[in-house]
Length: 538
Ligand code: HEM
Image 1 (cartoon, protein in one colour):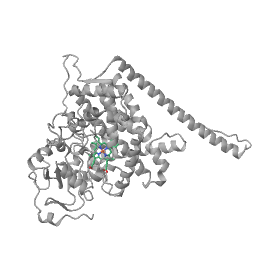
Image 2: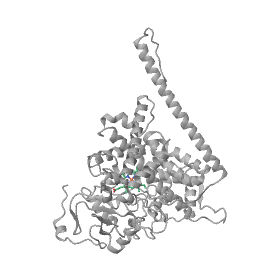
Image 3: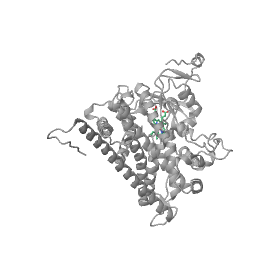
Image 4: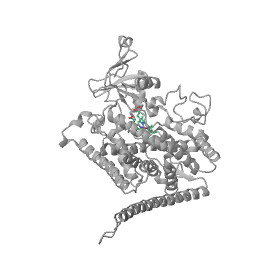
């Protein structure tokens, strides 16, 4: 913590603007739990691009100007990269060595080694195009949409979950359960989750009357047991030579040379890697569906681009450079309906000053993504879906070459500095493959009411208010673009599934053969023993 505020800054010291604050409770009484980001934005329109507010003793600086966020969270990152304590989790910052939730950890040694670990595993996966897992799961997704379109929300989340479960454990059979587990943690850590995150003193009630703590103990223990079981099962498979490639297998093969402290930490960091990749990607996918339904002109443009550029096939990551319209529509989806609209808070580790205003150690800096995305100078006509802002030189966000831009990487939604999101490439790649495939396969539109014959309306502004948001349940239609397309969706999934099953069976047979050979060779080397025939159990 060598950072020192400039003397001139200290001398200029004056008060922060912000809403009137009541003693202790600050401004909790009129901050709505739902759509909290809208209230924060309303205040930023009144009090300016950086203002102070308080909630039950915690001080917040709400930042709605990207330049200020960069100055504090990037350039002064050395003292602005800690995390606030989330009340309704046990040791969320890992101050006491729990080592469980990387994104929530304080700036300590566990965070530092787990961040490096996660970064290296995700980069390796990106460099290997996720070992084909995304292509495989996207084919299943399209197939499920043909067979059971009304259940699209489940299929969408399940695709995101299956991709992460396969990458992590080479086992997608428990993807639905894992989605639930991710939802449990997301709810628990969100201000709109348990009341103990807002009325924090309730968390300290004695255990015998503390329903919240007891519920969290149960949730926590189930999740931990699940992570541990995955690790132990994979270890057993590795020992038998029966584990195919996965993050967990890679870890187990190298565990002696890592600086993780053992099974508890390893199973947690690996489990979290899988968990954070579900709702973060599912959110923008939902909103992409809505964007296409409400903007058929862009839907058609993407369909045309995919048809022309991908030779009639499903888009792959190799097609990236040829698909600027698809990328513009994805990026604009993230801007139009940001899925972490409040942003993620950083906590300040030492007293500081910004433009003469004092920032005390322990202050939480909230980079309000909703406000960044509604900045009319950077994003003219901010409330509307306008992908052309990345494709036409007259817009401030236009950037060349179009083989590289638009890209979602570096978007303010991914946070700042030392805590910046580690899943940017994975998100970009999964959205490109999945959104491209959806446009290749379907015309997406509003559903028609079976009785009135009128289109069923959707309110795209309605969502939950958790830290990572998704739209409220809605109905829509997925119409295969032709009978031929429909047949291809079915064929390509059936072929992919057959190939996968065969590959798994062949791998297992080979593994067992290897084991057979090893045991036979060992037995032969020892020579026959009287009364003891070599028994090999397969
Ligand atoms: C649209 C998709 C996503 C968005 C908007 C998003 C957003 C964020 C944000 C705002 C943060 C906190 C940054 C900060 O504190 O400044 C974060 C952290 C993180 N994200 Fe993402 N994320 C997304 C997808 C993913 C995916 C797919 C993964 C991995 C599979 C991932 C892994 C992480 C990790 C590990 C951290 C913790 C970094 C740390 O605390 O050092 N994210 N993300």
